[in-house]
Amino acid sequence: MTKLFQMTRVSAFAFLLALGAATPVPAFAEVAIQEVKSDKGITAWLVEDYTVPIVTIRFSFQGGNTQDPPGKEGLSELISGLFDEGAGEFDSDTFQTKLDEAGAEMRFGAGRDTIYGSMRMLADRRDEALDLLKLAVEQPRFDAAPIDRIRAQIVAGIVANARDPETAAQVKWQEALYGDHPYARPDDGTEETLATITVDDLRAYHKAIFAKDTLNVSVVGAIDAETLKRKLDDLFGELPEKADLRPVPMVDLKLGQEVRVDYDLPQTSLQLAFPGVARSSPDFFPAYVMNEILGGGGAFSSRLFNEVREKRGLAYGVSSGVVTNKYSSGLVIRTATRSDRAPETLGVIRDVIRRMTEEGPTEKELAATKKYIIGSYALNNLDSSEAIAATLLSLQQEDLGIDYMQRRDALINGVTLEQVKEVARKLLSVEPAILVIGPAFEEGTKG
Image 1 (cartoon, rainbow, N blue to C red):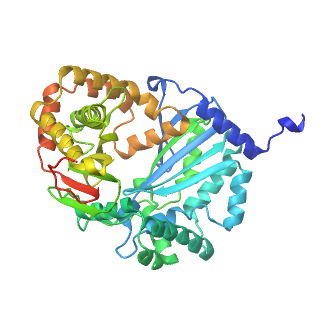
Image 2: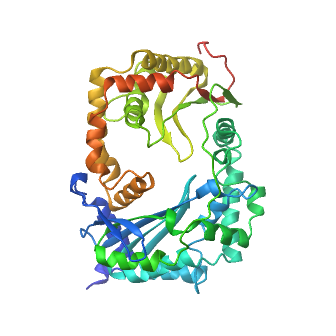
Image 3: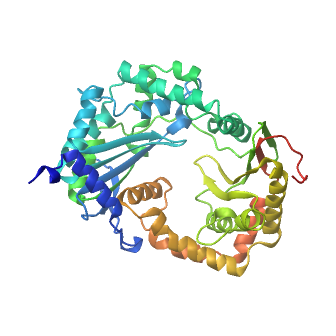
């Protein structure tokens, strides 16, 4: 073989990843999900796929930023950056070298309600790669030098973001919406809280959060169920049986208020927050369909898009989204417009909301929205092995059932026009919380 066609294992891995991303994924009706339960009681959802010799694993534990102790905000962000910075007998440099030699990619991260990890690996180097993941999960080192380096990186980001009006405004927005709830705290913490975090804090968080009872696992790729059963016990079998989680209360958004962040900017950002519905609520699908018609957008234009952009050219984009966190939910509308046209834009948004509340959608809008929501699911959620793994993990976290993909079309098609009208009245008739970032203006005036 000439040098032109030689590859290292790492570059071959990159090539295979690119090939895997480009390989068409079968329609979700053909994605066969197996529930695999190990001898030690670890459950995973598996989709076998031998298109390319790659295995992807994603997993999560309940916890995340809400589990940061008061005064230690940023702990979950800091710890999520340290799992590939040394584990077991390997210091940071050695561990990174071992990952490269195994042709594996490992990532960890923290959200509001979960801390999660993932690994993509070559199938023929699977055992090597999973041994490293096992060390990271069970025996992270938390050495001083990596702690200081990752902490400094987070602090540098906090300092940089403090100069950004949008970031500063979002801090005020979260505090206004959530009050003294953990959701109001900055995910990254602050310079002051990060400085207080010690090795003992990291070890205590790891011990409390990494436990079997809140573990969810999804696997996609070139591995069979029997092999996966053994690997699940190797990876997670020695973890504590139960997590030691701090209680976190449910919280309703504090609506009916206006948060003004005055900046002399040529563009004004607007956000409106309304009540939401829990993912487990019978109102979820009617609310989801209503939101798509209102501002979700897709294969066709939403009402907000038509009125704000298409008819008036007030903004490049405008959208609405249903937000379902574990302890709170909401419906949020976002846009940005020329500052001198911000009052007009807000007035148009309010008018669209009023008409949706009073009239609801049409039968034509409902039918088109259902068709789009059903047709776009595979493209948005199942277009790669990583996307499939992420989707399977999300379905587990939300307790939707392994047959959710087969039931989803019927759930959406079962939404009636009256249900959508009712949920629109329920959610949108409330006076929202409004965030305005930009020059001060009086609502109701024209730009």
